[in-house]
Each structure stands twice: as structure tokens, then as C-alpha cells.
Image 1 (spheres, rainbow, N blue to C red):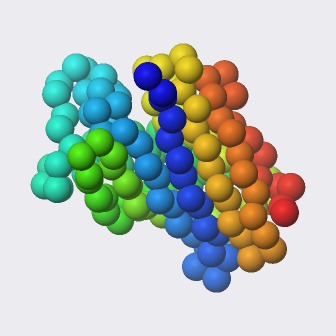
Image 2 (cartoon, one colour):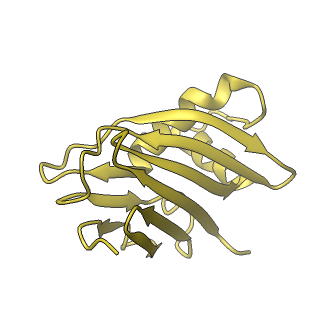
Length: 145
């Protein structure tokens, strides 16, 4: 089994947001949401019932942290589900600049010790790629491309 996620992150300085498209395997996401909610089974479907659980999970496991360790707010925009994969669309707000900010992507690392999370990060000045894995879930955003 491969345990991976892929995120495309677009920094929008005018709106002060990071616009994120996150691809995860649906069964892995359901396992993480269920574990995160005391073992209660959470199913990810087109029904918005799982959305509050997804937003809460993302707020804890995929975030931008400022110099005072404050997490920026997450706004869930939607999701698309195919047979095996779920795309989650969300934004991280109140990101005035990337200076002094760190990106945390610990998605699914609490479940899989071989989890690899790839992030393609696009800013007006260029593109960077980040790799996150258990024990290495936070990276500095200050080094703009």
C-alpha cells in the first residue's frame, strides 16, 4: 500500500488566503476522521454531513502557523469524491504574508508511519515543492521561490 496525499496550494496575497486542493484516498480519510472522533464511523460522501469533521481535521493537521504559533483559520469550500479519491477544497485565511509563517501538513501521519504528503506551493513569484512525512510535518514558508 502507498500512503500519499497531494496538495496544490496557491497563495493569493490580494485576498490574504492560501487556496488549497488536497487529494487523499477516501478510505484513509474516513479512517482518520473516525479515529479523530473517538472511533465513531465517519463516511465521506457527497452529503455535507462529514464536512464539519473534515474542517476540524484540517484545522489540526493542515495549517499555517505564525511566529506566535497561532493557527490561521480554515474555511472548507467543498469536496469531490471519485471511486478511491477525495479532493478537498479549502482556504486558509488571514495570511498577510509568508514571512515568519510555517506550513504544517501532518495529514494521515497519525495513521501511517510511511505517509508521504507532497505540496506544490505557488506564489506570484514562483513555485516550490515540499515533502512532509511523520516526524517532519512542518516547513518554513519564508524562503519564497
